[in-house]
Amino acid sequence: QVQLVESGGGMVQAGGSLRLSCTASLNTYAMGWFRQAPGKDRRFVAVIVRGDSTRYADSVKGRFTISRDNTKNTVYLQMDILKPEDTAIYYCAADERLSWLLRGEADSWGLGTQVTVSS
Image (cartoon, rainbow, N blue to C red; front, top):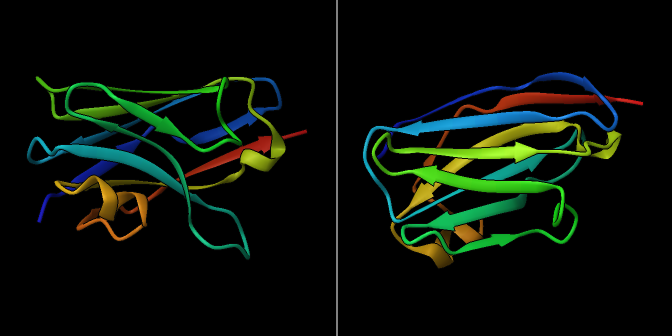
C-alpha cells in the first residue's frame, strides 16, 4: 500500500486561493482528491493519471487545477475562486486502477487536510 501525506489546508476567505499537496511513497498511475463536508458523503474532486490526463467534478471545473510532479511523487490541487461550499476535509487518493479511484475505492488514502472558506 502506498503511503500518502497531504499538506496545504487552511482557512481562507471566499474568492481566495489555496494549494494542496500530496506526496506518495511510490509513483502511482492515478492520483486524485476527494472531499467530505460535514454531514455529507465523501465526493470526488479531481484525478490525474501518469501522462497528465485529468478529470474534474463539475462543481470545481474552471476553479481547481490538478497537476503532478512524477519526479517527486507529488500531486497538487490548486484551488482558486474558493466558495464557502468548498469547505471540507480534502483527502488524497492513489491507485493503479483509475476506475477504482473514481468510484472512491482507491487502495491508498491520506489522513485528510481541512479546508475552510469563510464568506
